[in-house]
Image (cartoon, rainbow over all chains, first blue to last red; front, side):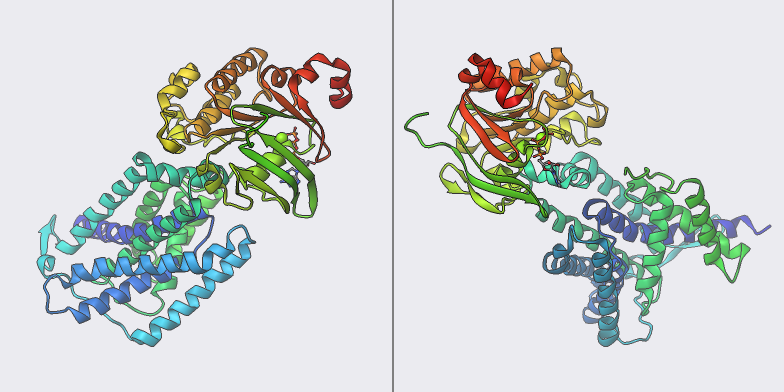
Length: 295
Length: 239
Ligand SMILES: Nc1ncnc2c1ncn2[C@@H]1O[C@H](COP(=O)(O)OP(=O)(O)OP(=O)(O)O)[C@@H](O)[C@H]1O
Ligand SMILES: [Mg+2]
């Protein structure tokens, strides 16, 4: 039996990983729920967010607040990239066969991955923790970096804000109505194509933010795009595609299973995640909090 | 109706769904303050005519003019903002949104600054909705959904209401209530284009009638003529 403090540390590290996953998966799920596009390039937006953050820190390294500028700048930069992609390219594929959308977003994965290699090389890059919260504290015999605590608070705060936006604001009502019946919403005078752009930009912003914020805890490497998109897909499958709290729950479960799976299958921790996904797919194919698709 | 130009003019419209052609040169005029009824059996193209006007299924030929400007091919949201309100026959309530939320997404300020509709006025028209504000649209009865879909479109302050088969599938007592409320809207000066299979319902409301058959206008004339002439009614609509 491992020591309690060790279990606590594992749980915390799983929870921290879950918050990054949530940032990425919630946008993926939102974009699918509203635009009906499964965006393979969503993980690439996360990767671009990470590289942009590194770049901005590199430029403004002397400024103690450079990390925060980098996080905001990277998220906004990725949001703009998402906006351009949706307006100029993706929009022509709505209502066409889904295969075209999949091919398009997959092409985007390849393009962005090569572009990142050209611009930032193939080596590892890293960003140090922001000076204000670079330290750590001890709690229950465990060393917890302040930065991780910040992430553990930020994740739920963003989830709550996102949820309130969807549930309580007029924009949120438009988004939910568009997910249910785009044509009807348009006939009521709402410019749904602008709304689509907004949703895509919001989802991209969250992916970019996730990528930027992960840099102090994880090295930036080529391939991080594919890794996160696979994880995000698993999260939404577990939680239920299109279900907001399902995505949050899915991320938390994923983080825990991965974190403790290491103890059971030290060399194949990803196996426990796949096993979990298989179990969920067998007992609730629409995910833990999702709803069966109406046919 | 005589001198003034019509507010809505549908000119020789042809519409198809992909390769399947449905409308073959439909022409309709609606004047301000009128209630015009499109009658016709199942599948003759009433809904398609309305979808063509709204831009939901743009015509392949012909023109749609709204107050003299050509709105053919406009995106539906622009048509709606120009003052046309569409109430679909299948109601299309946003099932996960509450009654209040369904009304709220459709709010649009009145053109020209006139008073216009508010949620209170919709509840005044359909008091039942006022008791259900927090209920999700998917949990309403057919009659309640019909009231909600009309109320929702009214929130956009349309000058012309396109009402597609409002009486379909409703209990007789609900149909009577609905007819009275539509008559009230007409009394308030709203222009209405109504598509119906229920002849009695529409003749009670309409000033003029178009009868559609196989995607073309078979008859047009004052509603009074159909009301008075049972033989003609029979011939056109074969009840
Ligand atoms: N989305 C569609 N795709 C293909 N054909 C369609 C579509 N919608 C309607 N049609 C066809 O077009 C024709 C006219 O349909 P439309 O719905 O306009 O008739 P309608 O007069 O409104 O009938 P109803 O009284 O049943 O509502 C019908 O033959 C119908 O089968
Ligand atoms: Mg119809």
